[in-house]
Length: 196
Length: 208
Image 1 (tube, each protein chain N blue to C red):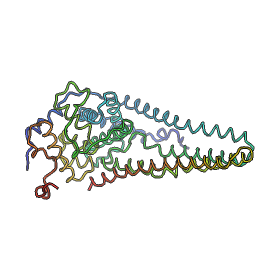
Image 2: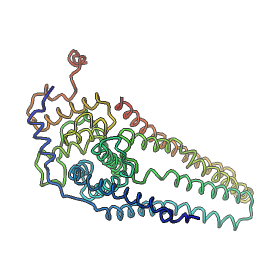
Image 3: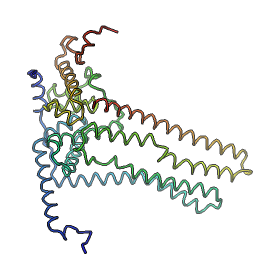
Image 4: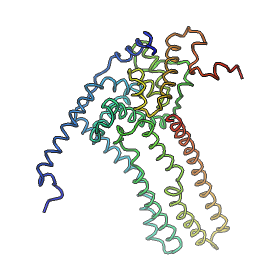
């Protein structure tokens, strides 16, 4: 059996005897602070949802003012897609809350669970973020193109370009997220390796 | 019919049980801070260099600890439980911060010379400053092992807290000892500085 050197002991002793400030929360403070944290999360979520609400209100208003059924269909799909996106954000937002079961899992399991949730969110971005938004935007662009044929020169060409730009931007977002998901997967692999 | 909004009024025994369970939880929380308060402060310093964010982290740990104690059932030791909560909360905190600050961490095997001592810790000895500067660069798992080592936890407890295999904990502690010796005694010979554990292939292999 090897005994720790005196240098090691000195180091540990220096570490453990460093002055601390004696920060200690009372139970009442814990309750108050926990409420503040929850309130912060609530307002942060609300800010995120406010942007979606603006989209819904804008297209909802335009829907009511527009007679063209093709354009109205595009707007309705956008509103439906945005509502679905908000619901998904709400369901998936739990990862930002304080850890409740932090004592039940060792660090590797705890981190692994968090990383897997983030990886799946990024890797499946089409199913919950891009997918719900794309159909409405494409239909709306096509409807606007259809409505302007004969009044605007090369209306279909412009429409095709707009739709192409949207598809390329969405594709780029997808690629960036897939790259981030691969980076998280490498971290998950590292954790798996470390636990063996 | 029982009013669903006030179920405990209809069952006074249940109310007493809830109160008793709450008292046990409060007592455990106080006990955790009595036993591990200073260690939690050191842990918060080790995970967060910024003074304001450090206080936030420490409070976050206290809150997580309070919330977690509802689920504490004695399946692991109280110390293991407290350290797990603290490390997991801290790791989540700094992972969020890392995304905001765009910082990269390194593993024990990549951690070489420490250029700048930790900031904001002017009352501590140079030794402690160097330790913090090293720890702040480390990846979460390596950081946890280093902290557990400095807090005097044995390898089995460290494995239980981190989830690392006993073999990996031993390897990491070996590296930590070399790193610490290298930092605290910069005049040691290069042979004694190698942080890798000696293996058969290491001793036989020449330069590639």
